Image (tube, rainbow over all chains, first blue to last red; front, side, top):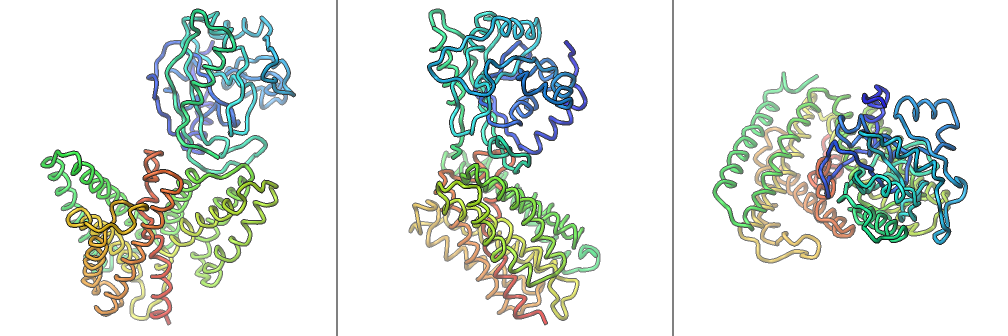
Length: 219
Length: 317
């Protein structure tokens, strides 16, 4: 895996920082070069780039986004950005068109977890949006189970919750032009799967860990 | 172009500010070293934060005057932008407001400063209160979300009025044509800012020293009648003493500074009420590094338009 930052990526990160005026706060842990999975709420196309740009550059060089294959392989530009610029890890979404019902069991294909484990390798970190799709920003949706299986396979990797605030107001789903507002990014305390914790309990707790980092109420 | 190089009175005024800031910085440092009590620490911290903000304001101000007229419009435009960004970040808006907000930031705000630059008095005076305020409600309604519709429309109108329309009257002072005062308009702007900011800090100091009777403790727990009267009195005295830098007689200068002090108090009180309403103490608290601009210019936003219109009405031919 390439351990350098593509110049286009640096440029886009600088633009994202400017547009979002992001105020990153490490509330539950410090920036660290160890392997981590950052997982956050998802409301805007800016989410990944803002979170990524808030990491110190030596960490950023080894942190890869998880991208939905159906979306990011659609056009040559998206493919170029995901592949060459950000070294994204492509995953098949099981049903991209309809979000999962809360009580519907969701079992990711084994190969999806294999791919994420492989992407982590010996030194990479990942950025993951466990809701699987962008929400309205009013509330954080239910988490898909990939993060749970990934955590079981790689218990040595820290799971760091993060909350991205106001990005849904800067560039909401379905809009092209951003409105300049300040956004907040808060990193929380790392969590892990407890010994006798089942999947749904862990996913609920992971979701709560993200929601609890909210700093101002956005309507 | 620049008053710095051919206006001795302007240099005296600006030099006086720098001298005062240096003095206040030294006093603030001494206070911090001498008083260690919990209560006085907070007050001294706020005092020092204000002094630091003034250094920045003095720097921005010098840049605005040196680059006048275009540079000053750009710089005040940036201040409007940052203030409105702060305001809109903290005031709840909904998804349906997105395009209206985009227009507010990228069309209405630049247009306002452009009109000042064009010295188109009528258009600059009516563009936001008439055109923009009539445009905003339908442009929100067309997005189809009726939830809290009236609140959302009013919040955006209020934000634009305070952060853009009102503040833009400060650089508009540079465009006035007062007989016998040509090329000296920067002094008027400086006068407005000095009186406004001095009044604020003097009220704060009097509140702390002898304040007893609260004015509206629900809105702003620190404001007292003693601070109000003495602050406005001493602020007016400072303004009166600066008559030599203005086209006013000492009596007129007293009247204008009294007006600036009272309006500045109103601005401060109103923005405190807004902050209480959205549940924060300072605009700068949630958003540490970028924040706090609106906390510093709230009084100026209320004083600038009325000062501008009165001076224009009575002094410009």
